[in-house]
Amino acid sequence: MGSVRRVLAALGLVAILWIGVQLVQGALSLPDAGIRAFLALVGVVIVSRLADVGFRALLHTLD
Image (cartoon, rainbow, N blue to C red; front, side):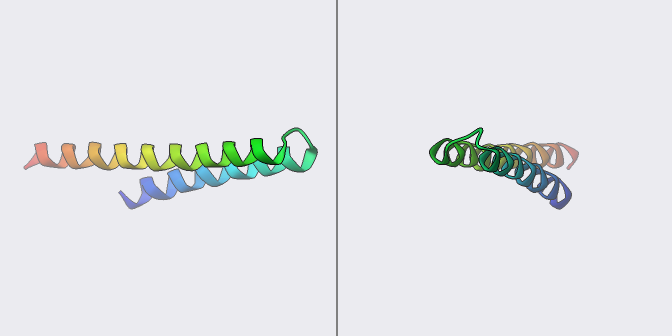
């Protein structure tokens, strides 16, 4: 489960990096960048929790 969380965290950081690049280039305003960063955070947290529930369900079936 730890490796899945690391991968999800890395994907979240890539999303934040891409938002930062667009912000520096002037393609995004500061409020739009904040909204996108917040949505990236929420997305990573939701996917992480769904993966956790999925792995726990899988482990429960193996018992």
